[in-house]
Image (cartoon, rainbow, N blue to C red):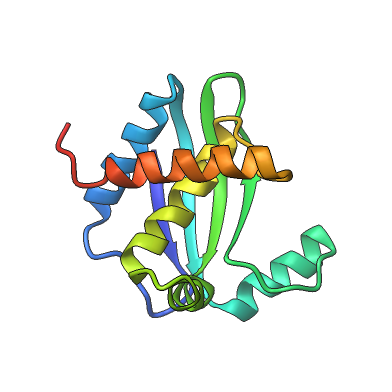
Length: 139
């Protein structure tokens, strides 16, 4: 099950389309869907989580808590809509594409992809691009 929660005025235009896409990502990685919660929030909300739970006093676009067991993908993905907007401007990207990047990024972590070194980060970026391209493909 994929759930969407909103701690800000932002909301997805078509939750079903996004849920189907996330499920397609998970299947394309030969994993099974458990329960994935997307929580859309603002910078301050995510900053508080970053400080309280990760002891990081920084702003970020995404924090994910992975509850995956075996091949069953589960977790909570917190996304700062403000930070996604700022990143889109910084990288000269459409907000909608940057949002897809961040949404796929969280699930890709659950599928086992890392991004702490340059090689892993490059592989993650390739996977993000692959999954973004799948968004409008009808299954």
